[in-house]
Length: 243
Image 1 (cartoon, rainbow, N blue to C red):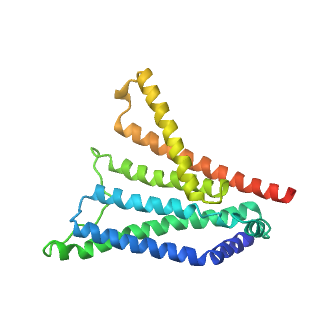
Image 2: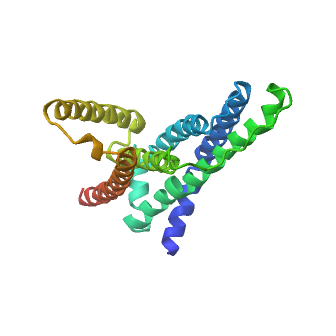
Image 3: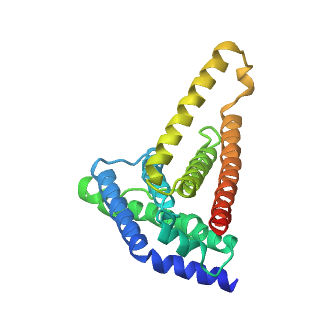
């Protein structure tokens, strides 16, 4: 536990400036988004949630792609792998900052955008007040599944970029985007072929069941990708010690 805390403290100290600048940039972006939503009188909660989640998802992926930025150079690689802590402790320290802590930052950023929208709403709408965003739903619109889908999709995309951060440390974000694009093409072609040549009983695939299946798949992919990221990080340590 002590070495984990020391690894966490070292990671925060080494990346203090970039972390602070990233959070400050995100908050500035959310203030701008809140201003635009107030100016355009955007008061549809579903649209508001999707638009902000899009920006938050991009931030989460880009920030996570820098998770192993110290592994880009031989000097940083040696410094990272030879620090007095186990591979699991070093991985867990980075994961803590880039997943649970980052999710708290994303949640705070969402409400910064919402506070900005509600505060500025009367300026552009003749003194009228805006309703605060509420995580409410009805059985007809499947709102609870929509929120789960957005949250799980961000986690899955974040995990993919986290794996890319250690699989290809240099230009990790760009390479992860290209890899994701290629996977999307292959998946689209495969899905199109299956749909054209096979028939399914589509009534069985209700919107609720489809959304729930997608959420479960996102969770499974998230766990698998983080497991692969850890194994790749562990493999880097083994290779470094052998040579």
